[in-house]
Every structure is written in structure tokens, then in C-alpha cells.
Length: 442
Ligand code: ASP
Image (cartoon, rainbow, N blue to C red; front, side, top):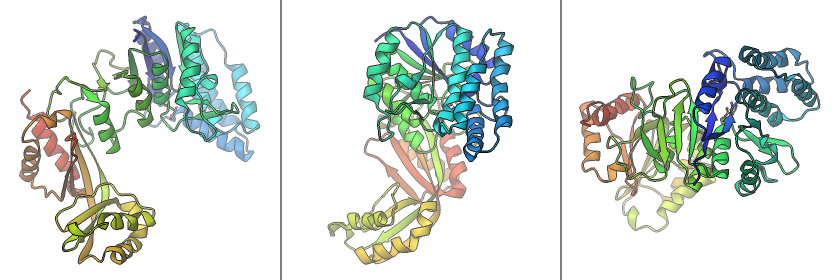
């Protein structure tokens, strides 16, 4: 393991000249921050448009054969504004001409979108006086369009070993035929993770506009506390339930290499942020690490006497779903009952077919469907050791007069999933936060 730190800055961290100055201060404060991955300029204020979205819109016009001069000029303006405010002695005119030309020749949507990070990284490299490295030659996708980690590491590792300080655009790489391909939206996080893995970094710092992950959604609980340390597995559980901030694919390359991620806030660099680690012996501050959830599920309740002794019962129920292109989220079961939880929007168009198929395959004694279910995941590596966690959750919910419709605890004891009505979703999260965090004795 080296001392190298790989630092990735998101769009809001590089939205204008003022943000560039904050970024430079952070990078230059520590000589170990050697490789910088940059996003395209993001929003400067809430109604602003990200450069990536401007590029998609501009290219859509070009691809229709329409005039896109106005849209392109607005993009040029974003970069020229940053360059002039920073007093940099560079010009992107030649690049702009090349890109316009490529748009006219239908270079592709991915190429178009990638120019946001490409241009921004040229500007940032000039400002930091770092080398600029184009990932097109090193970050590789296979013929099938799937990212190829092994090939990428074999190309990128030796290239970065020859370089002391560099800025690398996020979000894209190239196909075997050298055309540009992007990751999905937010993909600069993935690039940062790949670069960290390629140089065997000590840490991957992911700089954004929040001071790490919060224990729960701030739209539900006012000012929730940040999570100090979270394991990759806990994060996966919370992300699955809708807690955002980091691109899901960004975890794999660093996790494989055992490199921790630190989520940090460019606007409050002294905040500790959240550390994402492989395994933490450090007991968490609270019994729970985080709470997340989603609304919009339906439950198919199936009842049949002696269900447990009927071989293939579960398989037949799931076949009925599969035949209709449905997947399921959870499947809690009782002695003679089984409930299958599915996404309501996906289920409604095929509901009758699924029920007919289940009837045909397993002949239940009774079957009904309940809609308006919300699922809440209470996640925490310390739950395994703490006794009475489930009891505390349910008494908090009972106090708040919330009816629990379903409970599911995986054998990993890493999480407890609770089903409540959509209406009870927010009050339930508040009640759980209160009992474990707000009123907890530290
Ligand atoms: N600029 C790209 C996007 O807006 C990628 C990124 O910022 O991570 O999705």
C-alpha cells in the first residue's frame, strides 16, 4: 500500500471559478493527493443546468441535423467564464472547434457527454499545474459494452506509475474500436474508484457537497447526524433501499483492492465526512448505522393448509412471477402462509395474469393482494451484538401508533426490514431515528 490519495471532485465542487479555488486549496494542501478525477461543471444554483445535460441537449439537436450554435455557445461560455475568472493563460478554442465538428459528424451521445469532464479536466490541470491524462486510452470497455476492469488496470497502472501529479477526466473510457463510451450518470465516482485501484491508493477521497452520508433522509428527519463509519456491506443495503450519494458501481474496484473511501464536503473540508471501509471492528456510535426505505410495494398473501409439506410450492409461486417478467423484493413466510412483496408499478399491469398463474400452479385456499406498502431497512453491523434491538424498534413504532405489517430479518443480522403502510412511512422512520439516535445515550 502506498501513501497516494486519489481525490474525485463532483460537479458541484467544480461548478464555477470559486469552487475551483476551493478544490485547488484542498488538493495542494496535501502532497499525497496526487491523482485528481474531475466531473463536468455542475449546477451553480438550484435552477441551473449541469454541463453534462447541456451537452446531451446540444447533441440531440446536432443529431437531428438542426442548428445547435446557440446551445454550444452556452457551453463554451461556462468554460470561458471559469478560465477568465481564474486568470488562466489557456484557450479552449481549438477544442471547441474539434468538438463542434465531431457533433456535425454524429460522433455519438457518449462522446458528446464525455466532453464535459474532458474540457473541465484540461482547465483544472492548468490551474493546478498537473499533467492531463485522457482516460480514453486506458479505461476500457469490452465489445459487449461492459467495463473491463482487468484490461483497464493493466493499462492504467503502468501509465500512472510514470506520472507524479495528474488530472484525469471522470465518466468515460473507450470501446475496442476507440469510440468513447461513458458509464451511467454520476459515473465519475466509478472513474475515481478505478484510478484508486490502479495506483493502489491508501484512500479514495470522494469530494461532494454534503459531509458524508446521513443516518436517514433529511427530508424526513430534520438535521440527521452523519454516519462516521460504514462498511461496504451496510452501504449496499442502504443504497438498495434508495439512499444515494455514491454511484453503486463505484464500490467494486476499491472494495476488491481493500481501499477505503472517504466522502468529504468541498464546502466544509474540515468536516470528517463518512469513511466506507471493508470491515469495521470499530463499534458504531449507535446500535444502528442507517435507516432507509422506499414506498410503493404490494404484497401477495397466499394461504394453503399444509403448505410447508408440499414440495416445490415456493418454486411454483415464483415461476408464476417469472413467467410474467416480475421479480420479487422479499418473501416472508409463516407455517401455512407465504407473502411475496413486489414493486407495485411493475406488478399492476400483470397482476391478474400472475394471480391466475398462481391459482393454476398451487391452488391456494385463499389469496389476496394488499397495496400501499412501504419498506424500511434498519441497517447496522452492531445490531448483531446488541440485544433487544428488534424489541426497541417495535416498541418505538407501537408508541407512535404505527401498525407493522411485515418483518424480515436476514440471517446476517445486518438489517431488519419492516413493512408499514405508505402513510406511516415518514412517522415510522422518525420514530426509529428518535429511539436509536436522538434520544440515545452515547
Ligand atoms: N457529469 C456526469 C453526470 O452528470 C458524471 C458525473 O458527474 O459523475 O452524470
